[in-house]
Image (cartoon, rainbow, N blue to C red; front, side, top):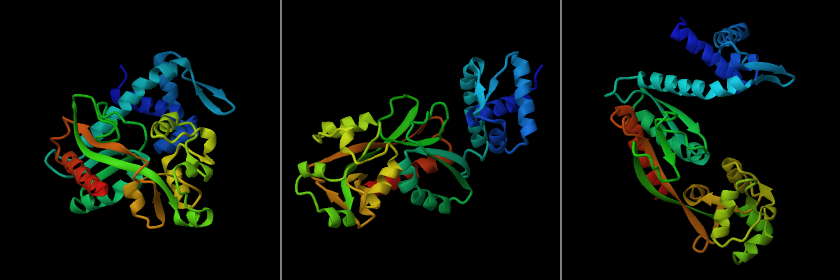
Length: 296
């Protein structure tokens, strides 16, 4: 009979190799020696009776069996992480670990000052911040608290609507000094535009707002929100930016804010079972308050 603890260590090694693509990279990710990772993967292969990886010039490639097992290993990893967070402090204490998920822009540009104030108030609180534009699954405990830009639909979630964060066109004042300020929205097309590369959903949003653009109209294209904002700040051209974020930088000039804008509905979400934990409730409430201030 395989020891469950040993079994999980084998599966952790398998998952690390699957994610990293090589034994050496997996060993670094796990903080283990490479022979230890190799032995654990070989033991797992022996237990399932099938090879899980094949060697290639680019590293280790997962077999079909490995890909079939991957989702189960991922689920166990999420459960293990959630278990560690749940055991990190007593339920009544604002202490221990809380994992927060938010979009790149919100996580990197907006949340750190909010979390700094919260952690000054509760020094035993630990935050794991996940900047991602993928909606991490609260029900699967990928995160404890999340900031979402769409209304959550699952019944087991507690959600608080913050409001609508407006976006509009912005340019750096140095760019406008060099190229002039467009007098009308139609004239914007003659400027150097910052836009998307493959995000057709965002392109359709722009088109629905009456901004008749195609991918070829963008001189600088990126689907990375942080790169988009960095390009505006660098004076590269005209692009979309959250209005409250742009207000922080007096060098960023809003363009046609009254005639061309669209909002992002914003929610703070957690699982109803976690809302009773003091640390999760404190983070949830701090994000609600802090994002409300940001929006105003």
